Image 1: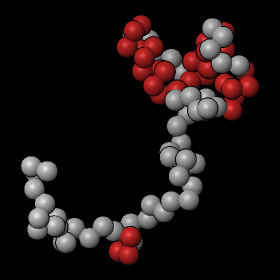
Image 2 (image 1 turned 90 degrees about the vertical axis):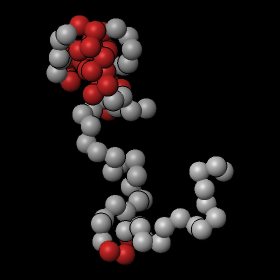
Image 3 (image 1 turned 90 degrees about the horizontal axis):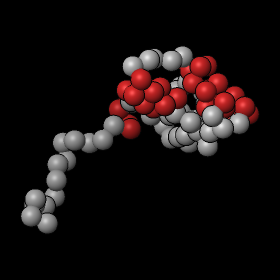
Length: 81
């Protein structure tokens, strides 16, 4: 389980007007019994990108991996389908 601290912080800020540090949010989540201390250490980290979720994908922008946008849609395609 991964906890998105950015969303939690945004919800807290929207409801209270206070912008908390991630360390404070982790502490509050543990105090409220919403996660264990271990989960707070391991699963509630600052967002570092999607790389760990898509480790087998390649996101390089080389010419070989770009989508061919010159091909266009099939001739029989329409909005009515």
